[in-house]
Length: 283
Image 1 (cartoon, rainbow, N blue to C red):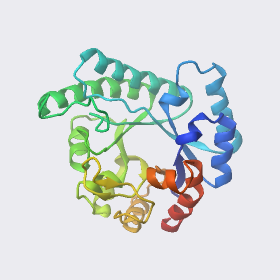
Image 2: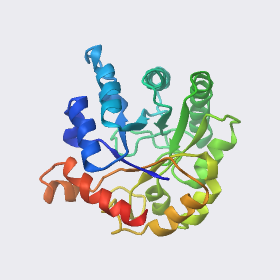
Image 3: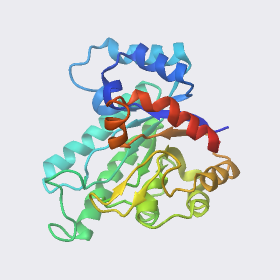
């Protein structure tokens, strides 16, 4: 059975572990996703991760995935190495917390003003060499730790759709390498056959994000609307997931920023219940 999850964001990032996990459980989710910059942040007391583990067990809420997303397409070699080191360090912390799946992306991060423009500032060959070199280190450590690395396609990045992610996957023979399947980013690039996407990835799907989309992959020309308001065919998406036997987490990644600001009073938590009801309608 597919589990339901929610990616904690907004004001939820400042909540204490017991408040967060009890909210997730009381809302009706099975799982929660956490962000490494928050739970592994410097200055957190030593007891913090123990409190997360205890709250997870107490409330019966699994941590489905930890996002450790750091740019691997940067011009400065030291910065690139530092980001790779950070991903590896956070994988170790995730493993110590009992979390077996981490979410990574490749970069360059398109919403950053100083992002690298691949094809202008650096060639595609060089950008891929950087990413592949980082992944060689990341996967070597992941295999030792027994951690799964779920690569997420993100608009504007080197790995942004099924085909670019397939190229990355083809360069490594590692049981630790798979995908975090988020249909919204593929849709922006015109890949809207959900049955094809799910069946093509098959057992490489380590985790799923539930997010809708409308538009094209250019800044200001797309939105991630409420589930069911966009162009993702979620009926076909979940039918295919069930057919291939996927029993992991389908985690809502709520990024309807204008709706959150204008309708929900800026509260991310306020989106959890209605989005869960929308998700359940497809499950």
